[in-house]
Amino acid sequence: MNDFINIELQYLALCLSTLFALVNPLGITPIFVAMTDKYSNEEKIKIAKKGIITGSIVLIIFTFLGSIIFRLYGITIEAFQIMGGIIFFRSGLRMLDAKVGRSRTTETEREEFKESDEIAISPIGIPLITGPGAITGVLILSGKMPSDYSLAILLLAVIITMVVFYIILRTGNFLSIKIGLTGMRVIERMMGLILMVIAVQFIINGIETIINRL
Image: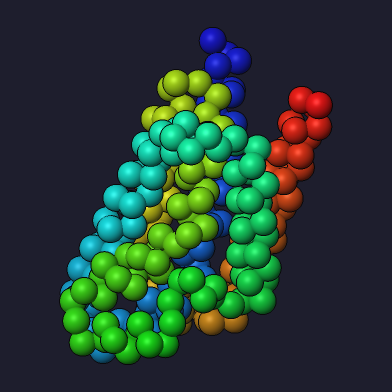
């Protein structure tokens, strides 16, 4: 029983650290603040809530579809680990440079949705909050579940990550003033380093499993 609990807790820690690094709330918050600068505090809260709900729904859907996608296309978890590790490493490298990936948002998108409430769904919900990296992350994590009960653990990790993200978005203006843009960039670089380490470990695990099968 203790072994089961320890394994599930380790899986929860892996899920939380991976997802939090991938969704990168501290790196995205300054962008959110800039994109919603013209709105009142009440409207900002509404946009943040709608964006988080949108992102959460996307991650939960891919959490359930992960195993189905693997079976349907005959994809091995090792192949996805290696590919995902490469994507994670690139994302982490951009975070170290304090840059937002081109897959997250563009200047055209920011201008196009500036006058519309749809900004909460796109580009804030998708792909700003939930980008390709986060989607790839839940797919890989769903394929690494140590037991049938781990699906609940992964869903819990998604919910915790999104709740923390929402809290950070709601306090975005306060954080920007207190921590400053420089402070938020430092934290983003730290998360980028963690993500790169996770990425390298994913690649190592995938290669080791393939070699052991030979």
